[in-house]
Length: 292
Image 1 (cartoon, rainbow, N blue to C red):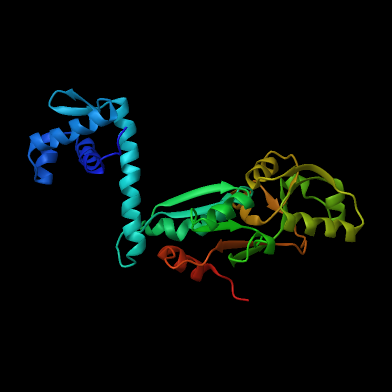
Image 2: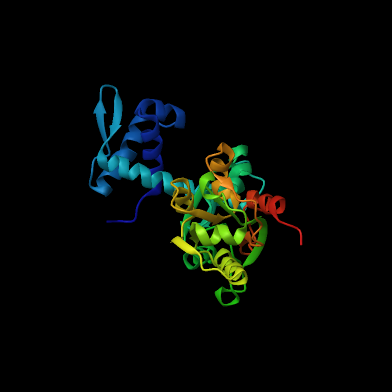
């Protein structure tokens, strides 16, 4: 197949979205016959019909739908390029955010809420493990990565870590599981749901060592959403920041034990220095960064 003619592809895209050859020709100020020839040339190059006539309108074939999907992404990427390089443009490119798969969904929503409220920019959210997300950040496929730990030195010195929030870790669960007079008694008697995140896990292990108890771990979970579900179902008491279970605590379904654990989970936004940083992200990091 010869190299794709993007001029033909753009005309096809305009007709596909309009659904009518004549109206598209009038809007683009070209003759209907010239526009029809552009579409025919593209169909010949692809070897497939892109439209079917239904009454006076045009309906995409299956190949037409596939072609339109690619065309939208191709020309959308061009629009993003112009918006990125022209910082004065009114249209922003999508903000591409990576989030550690174990990260609290409630925290992610809290971070994204100012952007979502403005309605000025689309959000692309990708979850994964630390290595995958940092690799995508390094190649500029992502604008920022949300995590609970800053990158280690061996993962690359080019990363910038912004500590944007922190929350004390507590014990949360059904009210009937919290009826104990001391922290040691509570942790020794009730089953616990513990996240595998290193900050919480290390802090918890230090706590039970100081208390001299052997806790009963009902589940070790690498997903905060599952921690929330297990606590709701009474499988055990969740050792987590309150934001993970904010809705359940607010409604009274779950309660927080009146004991301080001395464990804090930090939240970081990790970025890389860029000549053309996303303008929305710059403001977001300035607003969210914690002072030392």
